[in-house]
Image (cartoon, rainbow, N blue to C red):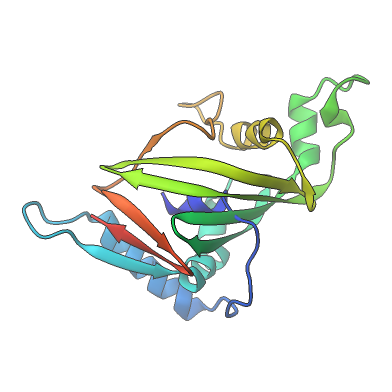
Length: 190
């Protein structure tokens, strides 16, 4: 679930350098969240800092990314807004997706480039939805359809051969009711 957030990033501000200690703290929290909450008990609230999440992405989470996606990071902006950044290998995508023709836009794009996306994360009653505000590739604003192409390509799996749609609601895992995204931290409510 938290790996989804990496796709929403627009850069890290003056954040502390990722450390193994911060990554371990985040891993412990993710483990506790994964176990779910006790039924009938008061909602459990687990706070994860932006620094912890980014350290986890550097030391643990990056290995879970698809081939061609690297260097993920997240900014938690507050008021439900987040941004995500990752470096994406457009050559890999172009080889598998493009036709190579003159009118094929993927034949003109290539290399490893940073992809940034910013938006609002709305979550309630165990369901999340991301509303895109802006997207950039190599610092250049791009339309939503281009970001959607990238997300669809890299989110493909045997169970989702067409990837995922940015606009589609998604279930929150392990009994998570909602995420409260504040400045530099998120609270997971179960």
